[in-house]
Image 1 (cartoon, helix red, strand yellow):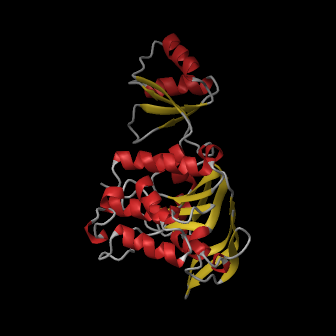
Image 2: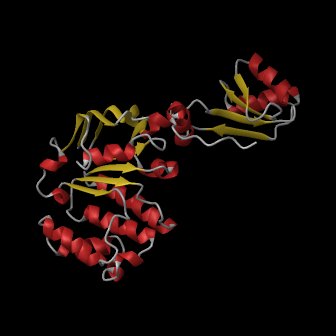
Image 3: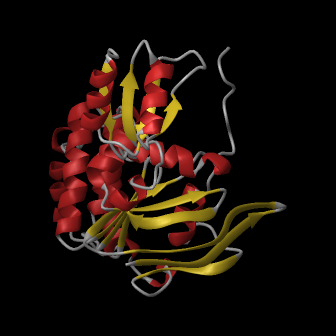
Length: 306
């Protein structure tokens, strides 16, 4: 289990992490989300003892990570796949880590086989693609067979087969009772992988709850209706008790309707003789909920195209 309590990190006058508290439980895949600059990487580094907090605590298994004498037996982590010596082979890299952590040499071969790098074991890491380096990073995290695993953007550079493999791996690790903490900017991967979410913005906690509950907090659910007689249909739907908003520009012919189901909207349109070009139920979306709930916490925003 990972426990973060009132964790704070300041760099001069800038607060990167601000009184952050959450718990990551075993047997679950917990996703870690936030806009760029939200403090995710800083938080992960403090959990691993790589950065010292200004205030607060972060513990793994009830104690700070630095208290574990052989760290890889307790926590496996992939923070940056590029932070490896390019002149070493994969097997040499993992063998050195195994020796320093009191891990049997056979685990090197086991994890290289598990991540699909057995045939590349003696190749220099400098010649690896990004996807191969990510697989090596996963192998490093698995080396000590730890109960807690942390991954920061693990699917960057992976092909579709690799993404699917990682997704299944994380689900299996959680099913074995391990604590899996996963940071990613890919909403589709979170939807397919995570059970719970920790969401932060500008270093502060926004939500810590099951993924399904967070996605349901988005307000852009409802029924999308396309029609050439949008104003007339909007008036009829409003009279029937629905809430209606145009979607897109002022001259749009699409409406977002809440308060009435799609079949009732279709029936009303039929009664009024109004043609419908679209009638789609919009369900809860992790992406839409994330965009809405972190809108005030986005530090870097691109300009709108004109």
